Amino acid sequence: RHRAEICEREAALVQGLAQGLACINGCRVWQDATCQSGVLSFRLEGWEPETLGHWLAARGVCVRCGLHCAPLAHDSAETLETGTIRLSVSDFNTLEECEKFLEIFEKVLA
Image (cartoon, rainbow, N blue to C red; front, side, top):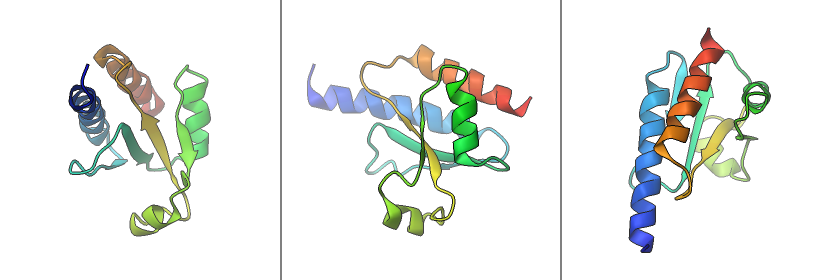
């Protein structure tokens, strides 16, 4: 497959995740469609990123929590004190996996 196809597929997965997360009350998503790679940062109101990251890990979801080696980006996003949770997708991920993540994530609110 060509790089353009891979980038398009990753962007579609990230967009689907961003839309799903944005529909969840208290969830803030940081996304820039003009320069988006296969990563997506978000926070859930009332949860520290590390706590939510551990909760997700216990349910088989791997995420990265914190500042992600990007303090200037976090400064501009006003998350320098708290960091965010970062999802990463690649061409190897499926739409079904993204939907499963959103299903698991919604359970945190139950």
